Image 1 (cartoon, one colour):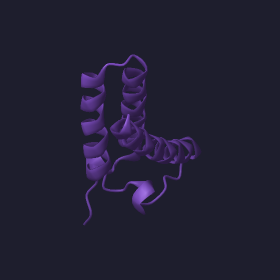
Image 2: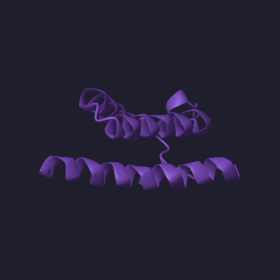
Image 3: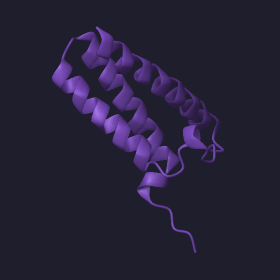
Image 4: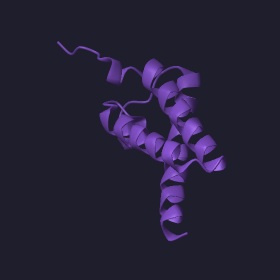
Length: 90
């Protein structure tokens, strides 16, 4: 019997990831590097622990809003990665 954990619940993890991305980009906008690095660690850990992450081949949620949020989180993950790489060269 497969049990669902909080790390595989789309209704919890997708909004949490979205808020982490918002916090990161807000910290970058305000040039607060300490807070931005903390959010980077949170984003990396949450994406690794999210067991049904649609970005990495997991199941998409059936709810249309959560499906849209999953796609948005995937796009923000790519933008976050490009931002991290760009900051390394500046």
